[in-house]
Image (tube, rainbow, N blue to C red; front, side, top):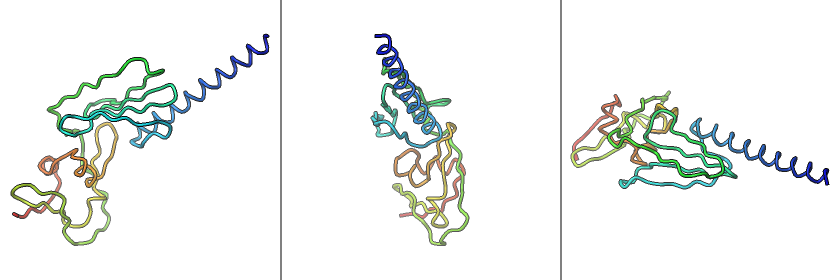
Length: 169
């Protein structure tokens, strides 16, 4: 009888250690701006289509990422106890980033990156995949991806110092 109890305690302890290890790996990867390895992702959205919250549910844990907040937008919950609410400053407009240009060499053709009702905006060469927006939380996203996901608009990029050529329609 005592041996059975010891075996059960060891098995439960190993399961807790295993789940803790998976959670630590996923949490670390999310904090480094990478995706989790051992979770299923659920998304909630702003009414205007911008991502508000990511919930990563793993084996006995949940990791919640609040977009548009600073500092420490990542919250970890054990055993799915309750819900975590993200409080977002809707006037922030995701302006907590710097533009990092990692372009070493590029083709000299103009690259269209945006349009509005009056102008077409171009980069001086093909480089939207080597210009990144680095957010205060450490997350880094390419200029191309940020524009496709509507995380920024061209006016905000210009205000942050991005050099573009614009031509009327």
